Amino acid sequence: MGYKKHWGKIHTLCLFTQTDFASIFKFLFFYLKCMPSSLNICNYNLVQAPSPDIAVSELTHASAEVSEIVFFLLGAMTIVEIVDAHQGFKLVTDNITTRKPRTLLWVVSVVFLLSWAY
Image 1 (cartoon, rainbow, N blue to C red):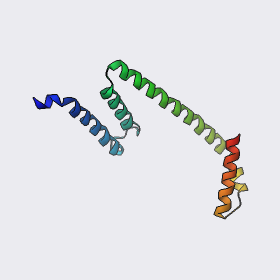
Image 2 (cartoon, rainbow, N blue to C red):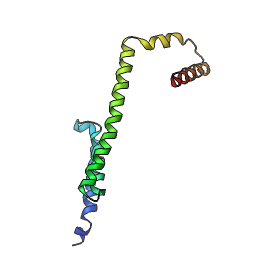
Image 3 (tube, rainbow, N blue to C red):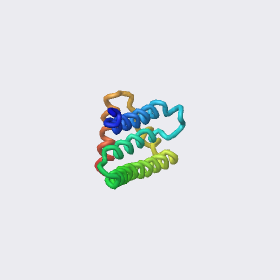
């Protein structure tokens, strides 16, 4: 009779333990690295939400935020790859001729501030 009282907590613990072990041993299972994290998010939302409608809306909101970030990163990585394919970074690295760490730090700081300003 006592286990029925705590069944929800035991079930939640089993789900989180399963996804944590999947995260630890992901190299053995050959699936995406983001899978254990997304399973944990789904488990947390399904367990903590008072109703299925609220759980679905929270998962929809979370997946929309993640997809925005992934879309932005894909665009940024595409730009970097195009610049690298046309050796755009070679122009910058060839013009940095200093060997002193302090001067290199100043040059990188000024370049960063100029790129941030525009």
